[in-house]
View 1 (tube, rainbow, N blue to C red):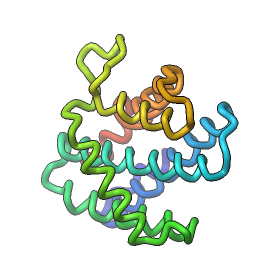
View 2 (view 1 turned 180 degrees about the vertical axis):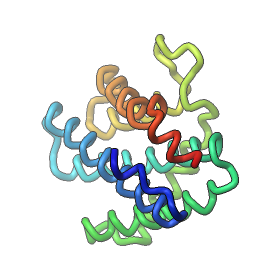
View 3 (view 1 turned 135 degrees about the vertical axis):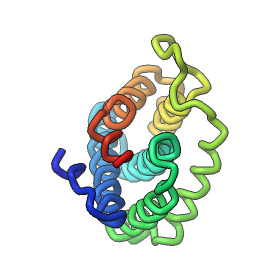
View 4 (view 1 turned 90 degrees about the horizontal axis):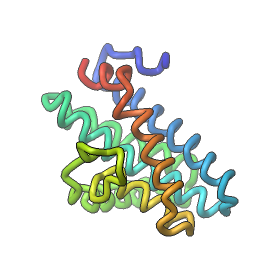
Length: 171
């Protein structure tokens, strides 16, 4: 992805991550909305939740792969994402977006592992499993394992098993 080749400054890297998160959130939530016939409000909620989940996931990956620059990068991504959400949907004004993202970060921090070592079976208690359950619950599809697995697969594809994003985070 061309977006992830920009590496010259912290601001450019944060902007690229902000846009990457937005692209994944929009595409992922659109896929879920289309396949599960969800309302417009549910779609907006999924975008917000997916964005918060990816912010946390990027923060965890920075913690593991680029601890020295983690705070600089994630702070800029966090603010940029809140502004982007507020710009697209004024009802989610910037401060409300920041509070929402902050609350989610506190909620997600209780999951110590991104994925379990044996993730072939249902990795309950992992961060990605929690993300899937939250997406399913927000879609009124409580405990829908297919939706949970779609969520986990999406984040694994775009972040965990993606050499390009990992290289971008560590550079």
